[in-house]
Length: 157
Image (cartoon, rainbow, N blue to C red; front, side, top):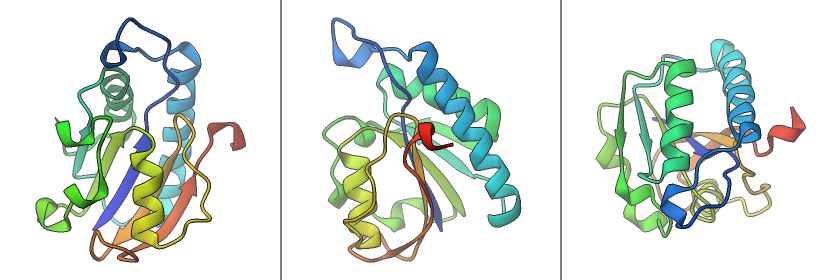
C-alpha cells in the first residue's frame, strides 16, 4: 500500500482552531505541491489514489478540496482520527485493506512523527504547511515503511 501524508496549507488565525481557513499563499502552496506530486507520480507511482482522508478541521477540508480537484482520488472522507492530537498507534494498515494508495491530510506534529516512526528515520525534515511525503507501507509500525518521496517544504520547489 502507498500512503501519502500531506500537511494542510498555511492557515490564517481565527477565533477557534477548528475554523482556521487557508491563506492565499496556503492555497497556492497546496496547488504547487499537488502539481509537483502529479508530475512525479505520473512516472513513479503505479495506479491512482483510491482514497483521500482528511481531518474535519477547516484548513484540512480546504486542502482536501484542492487535492480532490487536482489529484482525482477514487473517493474521499472525513477521518476524525486525523484531527490535532492524532497519534500513530491509532493507525493500522488493516483499516485500509483494499486500497492501493491513500492520501491523508492532517496536522503537525502527528504527520512528521508518523513519517519518522514508520520509516524509522528521525533525520527527515518536518513537513511545512503544504508539504507531503509518500511511503510504501508494509505495516504501520516502526520501520514498516519505505520512503519513496519526501517534499517537506513548498519553498524548495
